[in-house]
Every structure is written in structure tokens, then in C-alpha cells.
Amino acid sequence: MTFAANLFEGKTLFAAGATSGINLGIANTFARLGAKVFVLSRSAEKVETAVATLRETGAQADGAAADVRDYAMVKAAVDRCAERFGPIDFVLSGAAGNFVSRAADLSSNGFRTVIDIDLVGSFHVCRAAYEHLRKPGAVVINISATQSFTPMEGQVHVCAAKAGIDAMARVLAIEWGPEGVRVNTIAPGPVEGTEGMRRLTPSEAQRKMLADGIPLRRYATIQEIADTAVFLCSPAGGYMNGEVVVCDGGQSLLGGKSFSDLWAA
Figure 1 (cartoon, rainbow, N blue to C red):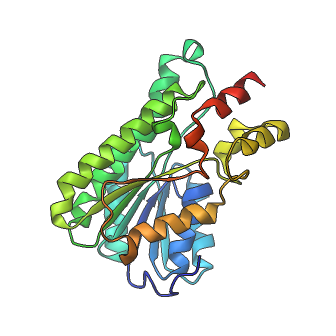
Figure 2: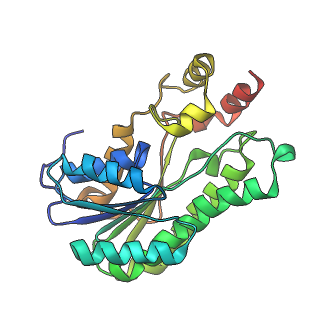
């Protein structure tokens, strides 16, 4: 999709989990549209690489290494972003973990790890950024998944975490809306070129089986998810608040059977 080159000129994006995949794609798109971008990830090396990539667009970019499970680390990173670039306009929360495991084989630690990274981490990012967001026009975008409302075998931990993110975002939309802050969620389906899909469909046969189970018969591109984020943060999406925007090619209309077939394959 084509947007005005200066759409986000003078704006600042704080992006958690944005050193690879969907979230880096969103950060890169915002940078190309004029935004200053600050990325956060656990890996200092990945942060350095992502910042270099973002600067290649001509944008101002910086970052910090932090674990979203540690509120103090997240708060320090958010404060550093505000000190470096000024008021924060957009927050992207997309740190996530995933692996395939049926509930009877899943350890308590495995379940808790995904909850802590996805759900608790998303709360930490939103809460830490709140003081810098309290102004009309500010937007928070959480990255969820269709597992939040479509039960899937082998994904009990992810289903629980993503459902929590969706619910949390709706509450924040109610509480922060009066201050002009909009909070929305994007729920992507399978996305090409992401670590998550490489883990969930390690073989070409599984990849094709999953794609064949999507009404559009293909995965989304990272750019298509990034364009959805741009829409939500642009004036065109200015009255959207508390929404879960599904971008999955119609896959969730068919339920979770396509994933169940993968585990049986």
C-alpha cells in the first residue's frame, strides 16, 4: 500500500520485540514514513543490527536490550526513548514466544514462560509507556494472534496468552480513551518469513498444507501486517479503539482444524 512519505514525520514509535519478523517490518515501515524509531529486544546484538537497518532508511533510530518480563528494564528503555526522541506517539508491543506442545506434555514452566513474555510483557510495555502517551492522537498496538479466539491443539499456552492480550487491550482502550489514547490489537494469521512460522511449519509439506487451508491460499506478507499497523496509527483509523483487527486471509473462519492437521502430519 502507498502512504504519504511524510505521514509520520516528527512522530516517535517505541517498538518492543522489533528486531525481527513482523515487528521489525512495522518499525521499518514507520521509519520510511518519517517516524523516529526506538526498538527493544533481549539481544543487544539484534538491537544493534535492527537500529543499523532502520537508519539505512534515513530515519533517526535507537534501541535498548531488555527483557519485557522485567518491568524496571522496560521502564528504563521507555524513558530513554523519550529522552532521546521526545514525546512518544506510538507504541508497538510484539514480544512473543511460541512452540508446539499438547497440554498433557507441557510443563508448568513452559506455560508460564509464554504467559510471561506475551501477556505480562505486553502489560509491562503498555504500562511503562503510559506516562509518555497521555495525549490525544497517541496509539498503542499490541500484536496478538488468531489463537486468541480460535482454539488450536498444541497451542494451549499461546491461546491463553493471546486471549489475555486482547482482553487487556480492550480494558486499556476504555481507561485511556478519555485521554485521547487509542489501543488496538492486530491478530495476524500465518505470515511469510517469520521465525514463528518456521517453528510451526518446519517442513515444506507442512507449510503447503497450512497455506492450502487458508481461503486466500497463501500466507500474509510482513508488509501487509505493517500496512495494517500504519492504518491504525493514521488519521484514517482515528476512530478505531479497542478493536482486534484480524489479518489472516480468512483462515480463522474455518476454525483451528488446519493447525490440528499439522500436528497429526
